[in-house]
Image (tube, rainbow, N blue to C red; front, side):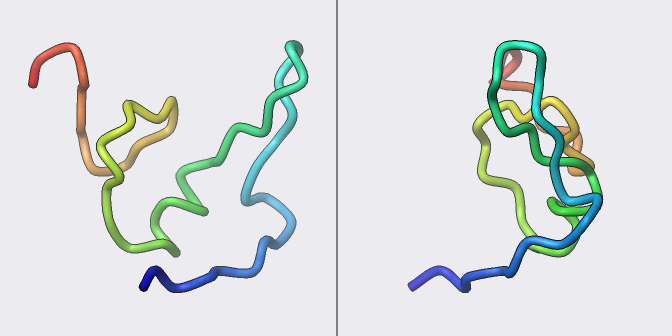
Length: 50
């Protein structure tokens, strides 16, 4: 089961399209790469390569 991480200020922002976009800060707190090609992935994953 995945651990639920409470959201804090700086964990995300709302894009112009109205989507929630998680920041590098949030990804580092989560502690792993979800391999979804996130915009601010600190783990270096690129879904176009793999």
